[in-house]
Image 1 (cartoon, rainbow, N blue to C red):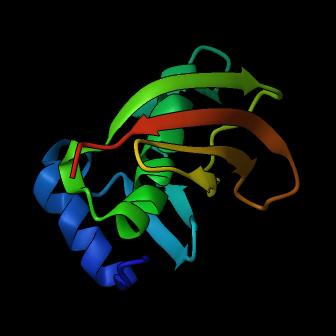
Image 2 (tube, rainbow, N blue to C red):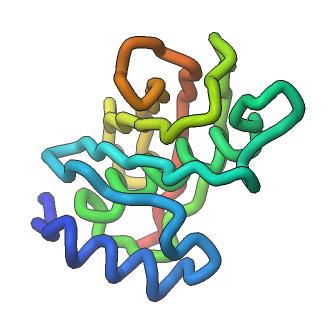
Amino acid sequence: MQNKLSIDEMSKYLDRIFPQVKGKYRILKLGDYLSEVQLMATDANLRPGDTISGPTMFELADIAFYVAVIPVTGSGTLALTTNVAINFLRKPMHSNLIAIARIRKRGRHLVVGDVEIFSEDRSQLVAHAIFTYSLPPS
């Protein structure tokens, strides 16, 4: 059963539970079993070569998947990342990135899905991640 949250409600929720990322991300879309989240890139996200760092892209993917999971599970901060595999496909230049997260299967204890990270103009897929989240016992 999906718990419908507006983008504004989810943004305020994230600001409250993850104040360390406040202002770094913008939720663009919340839907049934999916989310789109934009990284608001700054110089702090760069590595040598004027490219967005791998840890920054990992954080974007994790936030995007979390935003997709919470409305579906209602488990709040208790949903945990248990496994991630991420492939960095292309060198993203210094620009905002867009992550599209999709839940592929929701079980009683695990949620599995993937996240695609695109350049801001959505012309290039720069990374792809597969996630498994563990849900707390009910």
